[in-house]
Amino acid sequence: MGLIYALGAYLSWGLVVPVHFRLLDAVPATSILAHRIVWSAVLVAGLLVALRRRIRSPFPLRPRHGLLALSAGLIGVNWLLYLRAVQSGHMLDASLGYFINPLVSVVLGAVVLGERLRPVQAAAVALAAGAVLLAVVLAGTLPWLSLALAASFALYGLVRKVVGVDAMVGFAAETALLLPVALGHLVLFAPPVVMGDPARAGLLVLTGVTTALPLIWFAAAAERLTLATLGLMQYLAPSCLLVLSVAAYGERLEPHRLAMFGLIWLALALYAADAFRAARRSRAA
Image 1 (cartoon, rainbow, N blue to C red):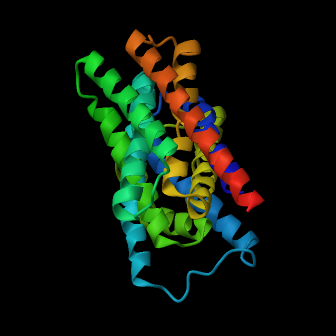
Image 2: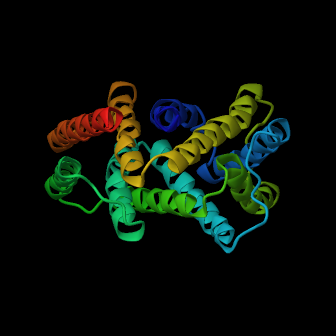
C-alpha cells in the first residue's frame, strides 16, 4: 500500500495540482494559499468524523507530536513557493526543485535516521545527484526557488516520519495550526476574488481536495516506506510537471535540463531493478 499511496500523491502533484492552480491565475497566490488551508481543514475535519473508528488515535500525546507545529510551517512555506512558481510561469523551476528534493531526502535519511543504501542504490543516487549538479552548472545560476522548494519539502517529509502520527490526524493538526493565519488573511488583507464568479468559487473550494488528499497519501506512504525509497519515487512528480510545462504551457526546455531528465530516469531504473531483486531474494528466503 505504501507504493500505491506514493504514486497517488506524486501523480496528483505532477499533473492535477499545477493545472488546477493555473486555472486560478487571476487570484493572488497568498489568497489561494489561504483558501487551500481553509478548505483543507473543512475536508479533513469531515473525513475524521466519517473515519473516526479506522484511524489511530494520537493520544496520549508525546513530546514528538509538538513537531507538527514545525511541519505545519514547512508545508505552508512550500505551498506558497510552489504557487508563486506555477503562477509566474516558472513551472520548470518548480520541477527542478522537486528533482533536487529526493536527493535531500536521501541525505536526511542517512544522516538523521541511519538508513543504509545497497551499492546499486547508492550508485543510482550518485547518478541522480550528478545529473542535477550538471544541470545547475550548465545553467550558470543558483536556482534559489528550486532549492527552497527542495529543502522545505524534504524537511517536511523527515518531520512527519519522526512524528509517527496517523497521516490524517497529522494533517488535521497542521491545518488547524495554520487555520487562524489563513482566516485572518482572508478577512483582513485579501482582496475579494470570487466577485460573483461561481466557477472561480468552485475552483477555490476544490483546492481543499487537491491539497489534502495528495498530502494525506504522502504521509501514509512516509509511514510505510523508507525515506530513501520515498524520495526517489518523488521523481515522478517533477517529471510529469516538466512534460506539462513544456507540452501544455510552452516553457522552453534547455538541453541541459533534457540531459538531466534522461540521467535521472536511468538512476530510477537502476534503483527500481535493485529493489525488485532484493524483494525476490527476500521472498525466496
